[in-house]
Image (cartoon, rainbow, N blue to C red; front, side):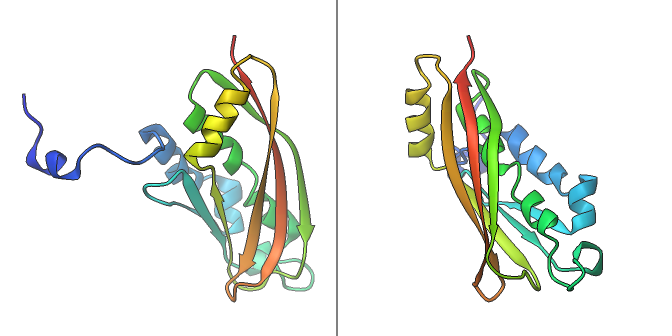
Length: 164
């Protein structure tokens, strides 16, 4: 049986995220903590990356009317672990080990962060974890305001180990 003409024109998929991962990212938008905080997750097609935005609303603002710090952190929490787990595949344990956040200025309006784990970084991690020892990989995300100003830096340490 031959491929439909539309599939032949598209060629092989260059999307590094499996279909299940794309589905999970869709459903994260409906997860009550993100829905309530006004967090929106968008996958960046063709790349192992997601962009997360959060609008400043009365229900996610602090006493001063700016983005609540907990909401700023929560919008950044799971994405490096998820992206790395999906790209490494089922043969690896991938968990959050540690996190830090540095607030640089108040978040007003819509804030945005992009999370990406490029294929070459995945291969470096895969090679380093090949012996079965634990590996701690560090990532940094930057949260920007709509005007481009840096609002916060979020550091993540991700634990990776090849399953036995």
